View (spheres, rainbow, N blue to C red):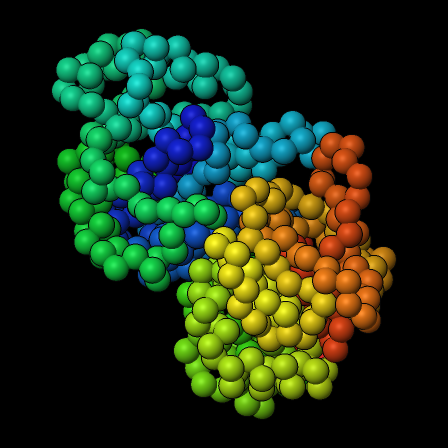
Length: 453
């Protein structure tokens, strides 16, 4: 067994509660495996930093329900304790495959048959907490609730009011956190600030572990978090015996760090040797590589440094122009265009492989699951193939109207609703560049083809 940490809504502090649990367990030397519901990249960075084990995303839209179960069971095999951090509110998912809350935290809890630990934000409420808790408990009779965590409690008197309101609901209070600004993780335009940019992160995690010592009922929690090991075979696609190793250069630094660890593992499964490098700090690009992989991240935050690294921009331009297969997602797309225009309206030259396009930071957030139909052949995907992905960005691709004009790479539409299709992405010189974030668990041919070029 393990627990799913859920919230009544976004912003209730379930990430802080999750990190407190993980920090305490890690401080005591336990082997802990964590998971994150949904497509998020940043929360898993915190999990991994705490536990020393890669956090895994459980997303049945980006992968499949079968993949989610396999991923969970496979990665729990080497752990003593495990937990799953939820996404948004407990029942907040998307209408998909005849399920109105597909990919929600509740969906994952039911799929994996795991009890739910519900985090409630108590900062602006007292006795009404009973009605909220009862509503969550009764909404889906299939769910098994382990108990509650009361977060942002104002005082002992406030806690007494909350406890009185919850009496008789058969929802044990397994944890309680008082308001503390020092436990707040800083954020910006795409959510939490990644771990590599927080200078006092070790102090915060140590404090979370200390607070967790007295904030949770560990006697009741530990048995719930204990892993029931289920033997499973290799997660990644059965037998594979690549004959040759393909060297793939992966851009990985503060500007490019949105990657699913599963994608790296699947690439390795098909024979990739991953060469990690930094477009921010390195003075030259990796040598003797057969592919480049640029993930998402924050090139807009580090646009000045990326632009100033002229030697890397120039050598990368020539290498990619020669036809080296290149996969660029979101931030990677931004980096390969002519320039990035930041929130202040300042333009910073980038690699320039798509000289008639620049990316402009906007106030509005583009967010959601997408179905993409491939319109142009690349080394990774072929015309007519369909993929599912996720968009999460504040930049917009601006066509400068220069020639030659680039035909779009993908026809994109949301996975639900009746919105019209849009067109997106760029390709040339064996480059696949798109805002769409892909998980190779849904389409392992991407990784296989990457390693066969």
